[in-house]
Image (cartoon, rainbow, N blue to C red):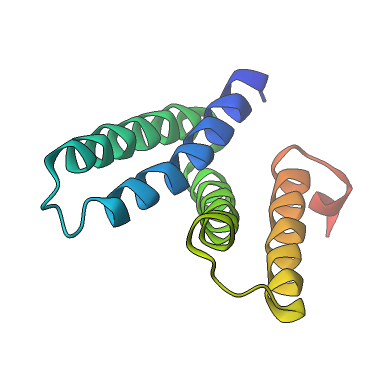
Length: 115
């Protein structure tokens, strides 16, 4: 599998929290500059996701995209919006990371594929 596909999925995943944050700042799409930013970032995120899907497949791509996006959005919520930081939240974030690593290992023909 090409490193370009993996780079595309990482970029797509990192863009996901960006459009979520801009959507929150748009105040229900009433602030036009933030609404435009949301649309552009969402389009770019989906575009890079579609590029990755061509090689990685929809299941792997979507799972990694949502995982990166969920982690990024949680971290952004903690940093930008002062959402609570608890040990349980950190544990669940780590569980998402473990899931993403597991998906990567199984998608690339790693050891876990033989089960």
